[in-house]
Length: 473
Image 1 (spheres, rainbow, N blue to C red):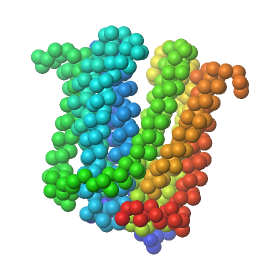
Image 2: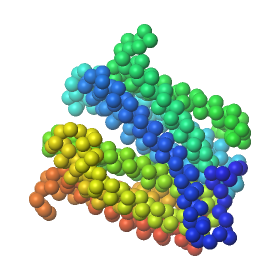
Image 3: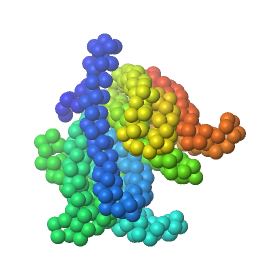
Image 4: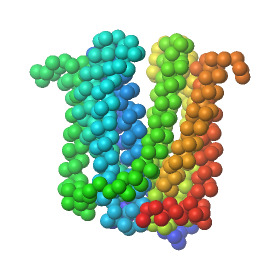
């Protein structure tokens, strides 16, 4: 096994040298993850922009369709993300013979997830009727999803195979194939949406066909690469086929479902906030969406570092380097704090420029600037919580963090945000800013509780850290 991406720590090095070396390793792992995440976001941007140039109905239909499949994908994708720490732990403990069997269990979960997604997305008509969606937009949504579901199996299988490549420390692989998918999606959108090369113009429905085809092409290319690459000569999918194993499947789901549910809870919270703000008018909703888009974009950096942190800690736990894992978990908080302070300062100073970059409507700009000032306040809490929860996932601790996130978001954020936005119970109604204050309180609660859990759980002398190692065997 190569040591380029996940090197074994030098136990003779001093504290500062070890810390800087581990930060460098996180950067090497996290950089490609960041680019892969941005490439995935680019697909959504490409669909939105190109569908918007077809018609308003096409844009709305694609947007509604994406809002229906995205939560399902994030739940199942989060569940499958448990493969990364499991495989990274096997690599750290040199039990590489267990890597392909668990990879195959992930592929079986991906198949089951694909079936569920296809069945659910094929039954959205009653929901659209209940929402009294305009017929043309409803038709675009149904057509888009009807085309999109053909690519779901390839999309979910790629998520499972990402567990293999990322778990081995080769984060550049999914980066490359994510960029390939985005590069394929762009011309296919042009062909299918606007009717080129002799094809009829499908409008927004064409986004679904383009996404499905690009998913299959990228997945096929990934399979060919894994089968032929010398890097993966010891990890062949065909030669190392493994039958379903109930014990491994249960362990994967026990670790992964809390991750998927945590992500689903967070995504659904933002969706509910957007719905609550609708009565406040289009300018408020638009300003909220712009502010949310900005923080989602900059969040990709701490999120990518967090994903790298999960890989690194799980590797160190597998290698029985509990002291170094403890050091990485805690020193990463310093790195996260530095990023958060940089973000906070940038949002305070750059909010007016960002607002004008997104819109020329003065009322929307004013809402955006105000909300970005609140976003600056919760950067420390937001970056802190994602760092802590990522470290805990490296320790295979996912259930209690899930409960913490549910409590913080649904127990504190939403009730407090609603009260501050629409009522005078605590202070005069703040409008949209009330929900952003609620976000700050919820994320701060999550950050404090997760930090406490991490400090207790990550102690090398604790039975929890030791049991995390034992679960990699």
